[in-house]
Amino acid sequence: MKRLVYAFVPFLLLSTPALAHTPLFACYDNADGTVLCEGGFSDGSSAAGVTIRVLGAGRSVLLESQLNHLSEIEFDKPEGEYIAVFDAGEGHIIEIPSSRILP
Image (cartoon, rainbow, N blue to C red):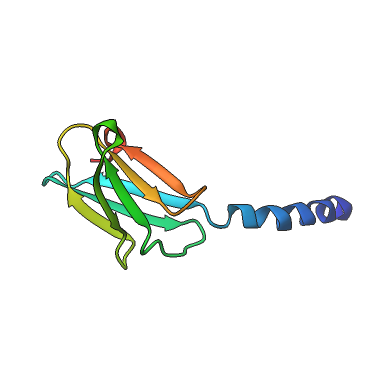
């Protein structure tokens, strides 16, 4: 049994860094005409300063800003369909279409 445990230790040590910094992003429809989005990373680090874009029809940029010191942004809900984009760089981009924004 000890051999089996020791065989997996290197695998666990090598795989942990790959999972250590996964981006997290969620948006909520406030029902008052605004949308609140929150971001972060799976290792608990802040997403303050991460670029947020709101894209409209044809992926035109309706809003480009950054998450505040609380890793949040609130914006007026656009007319029609839109996409909220969390962009922390290559491999750290999350897109949420308006149809998936939580009430």
